Amino acid sequence: MGLIHVEDSADPRVDDFRDLSTADRRPDRPGGRGLVIAEGTVVVSRLLASRYPVRALLGVRRRFDELAGELDGLDVPQYVTSAEVMAEVVGFHLNRGILAVADRPAPLTVSEVVAGADTIAVLEGVGDHENLGALFRNAAALGVGGVLLGPGCSDPLYRRSVRVSMGHVLRVPFGPLTDWPGGLDDLRARGFSVAAFTPRPGSIPLRELRRHAPGRVALLFGAEGPGLTETALAAADHAVRIPMPAGVDSLNIATAAAVAFYELAPGG
Image (cartoon, rainbow, N blue to C red; front, side, top):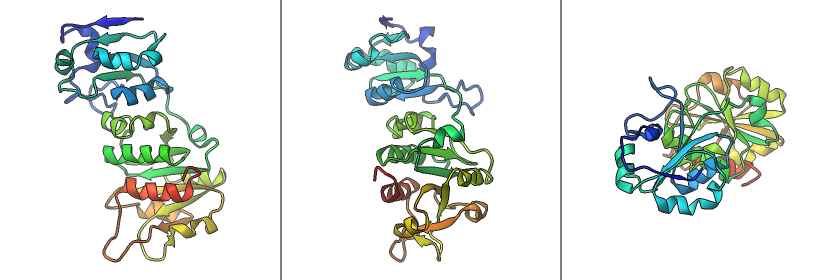
């Protein structure tokens, strides 16, 4: 399907892209449609290579030219317009110059997320979209095999998370861990040791964890600030800390996760 020129910002064919500054397509927002939105050529490229079924693209001609090889043979509408019309549709000026929208496939099961993974991340209460996106980017960079989302976690496919992750939320397998904290027993049955990250005294320094958990490991992280709940800590096999100087009691969750991923994951 070739490029389709759009000259009127009111054209209903581009409604999937409309007013993203106030009506992002989160599935938990009333009236939301659950669309996945990719911004910029790098993230759009990762969306095109993912399992997410693309619905349409909207952008300026230069960005379509940059993606020409990847778009060749893609049978979805590709709407080309000016930067001014695109800004009127989207609700703000988009420097990246191209958007793609996709539908969501069925969520991955725990079995699908952990298949073949030696190291995974398990999250509890991680509600900040930017932290979540950054954590996925770190997981992709450092060889973490998957991410499981416990209670209180934000949607990794929220537009801001997708953007901050540079599209890696579309590559790193993730899914819900709905049985909480009982699902940690399921991971244990699959050969994982569960390591909960906490600054509390008596926890194992990170560099000593491999002596206690030499095989598959599930790294358990909580929300920035409150950290993991007592329920989650009690359900873990090990409490682990990242040693820090006196007076520094915590790291941004994405940073803490990156340190742990580097130390433990095969890509580190």
